[in-house]
Length: 309
Image (tube, rainbow, N blue to C red):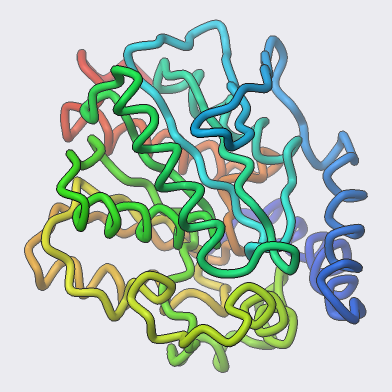
């Protein structure tokens, strides 16, 4: 059972996110809401000594995120969530900083193009171009961990598919937080959890999906990786909350990867909401970051022995 503080946080999240998102008539209103929430310091809880530096890769705006422990020998390439329609730069940079401090990496967040101004495949193309540019600049694929939450998890999988098609080297590992893997939303959890999810209601998800796809077929493997025929994947960690409408997007994807004998680990946070590792207010978020570091160490992405608890 989730800690009582986590259950209380779910109630707060339902009022701050779900109820207010449900009242939005379009993604522009959603974007304004998310921008306001992203500026609320108590929710963000940015770590001390975080350093954020704007940059550009392949003419796509990005942001370096560094902490005192950051080392250029390991790069966390991060694709943010936001339904392909909005971005929370303060929320995501704070989370990236906490992970980077834990794994001694530099973070690079991609500010990919957003819908409705830029529909499919704009976001997918931007993320792939940044990965390719990093390789051309001299980064070894063994130095790069791809990570993304929600829509960003979808973009991680889409980037890996494009990397395979281009015969480029795969990243060292992939970490997916509540990834969107089935744009058709055929998983049972989309309906079984529709009243329990404290983050999203189903109509809000459908609005964001339809805005980005703009008529593109939802079964296209690039936008619904659950339907892709994977040739090879790096070690992949999936972290998801048990209370999500997107729960089956993770569990079904994990089943498929397991059957294909890929190195895969699935963590289902009991009682947890969508992308729960982002919320440092709950202890399960810190535990998830510990699990991410442990997974990367298990697969020799991070060198050295496990630090003492």
